[in-house]
Image (cartoon, rainbow, N blue to C red; front, top):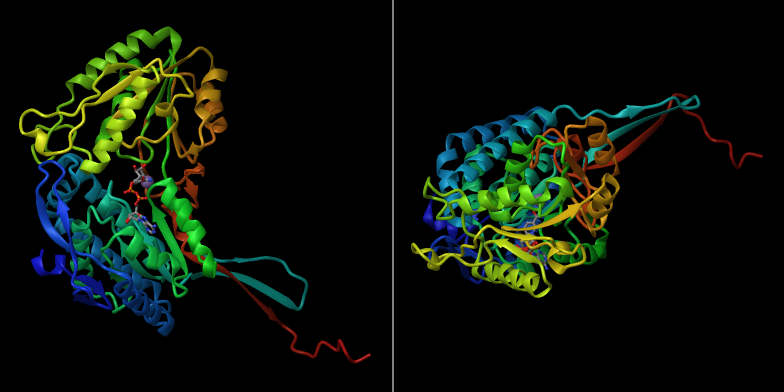
Length: 493
Ligand code: NAD
Ligand code: MN
């Protein structure tokens, strides 16, 4: 990566310095070290990027470029990401803290996402239906226009791919705003975008804070759509602020997803997935299985085995191949998680393991928290209701299927759910009755680029991925034509 570009923004096909020349530190959460100084865009810079995207869209060369041209560029970009996958993974680990294994997985998924939408670019189809002669009607899909895309820090490169790939495939122009905590892989991605030769103004990068760069995107009358992934509080605020020009809004927000273990489940896989669902990516996953519901008859044994498994997880710098779980993203976020752990204890949840910061082996410089499990948690306790977004699990017992369903749905969120059972009829009943956008049976955290991803209730609005994610970047137009050209005669009599 060109060191100079880190201090720049990518606007209208060029790397340029922010107007006020300000930068912000980029920190490695495993060491607390500042590893770069990245550009901090303000309203003026964002305005430039919006104008570039607006002009690129309104001129029409991208929107009307043949879908095959758009597909070819996306395919070429996918190949470039794949070619640089190891560098990108290492950069992601250094900036986000996640293990190299996790980061490599993310890069591979990003490649898949660009390939999938490259394929989809040439596939949109419309609709026609029987109408009364002489009228004929057809329905076509068109790009929405200028899309502002605001993403979080937990999957920096992958979220950029989820946003850019479908939007570009559908013929929109984009302004991406990564999280101020994790700008690095996006900057590298935009170097690859620059090499790929997208027309100028079609894809732009703004690094900066939410209240500054993000806010300007949300409130601009020249932006047609905001796609956002992040916290529910921010999401609600964005929806309110986007109302000025009634821009389209899609939101991928938080969750408090139930993972339900029935006594008849395959014990070993249920146990393995229970740990994976909450401790992968240090629990910083919107769909994390953070509420574990376990049937009473296996509860004590399951909790004991899970606690043992959690205590064995090797927590350390993600760049060390021996580490199985990395730090959390920042000092501030670590303190928020610690506060939740303290609240859990105050409210009487029993700590089966963890609960502390790890300070030995040099880990005091970074933001490491032990895998933490609260058991016998009251469903009304704060830790059972609010999203913690860290390696903190709440375990609740249940007696019957009905009780499990009641507990599962007793949440303002509705992103995902896991169901572990060997009774397929029970699995189907549960999967259909849980109010969540994604339900997994005997597995967890499987994410398919081909299928819809998104939440019910306060977990969001709209869907990403698959054809659903593509449609979120299109407007529907009906074209009505007549086969008989004649005056209406309306005022003739
Ligand atoms: P956030 O919602 O504050 O930030 C997400 C993105 O929104 C960032 O790019 C940020 O700069 C931007 N943003 C912030 N305020 C904005 C504003 N007023 N206008 C426009 N853009 C704005 O999330 P966070 O601070 O990174 O994390 C807070 C919580 O969000 C976490 O604790 C977690 O609960 C949740 N979260 C959820 C996801 C997810 O995948 N659903 C991802 C990250 C964080
Ligand atoms: Mn998400």
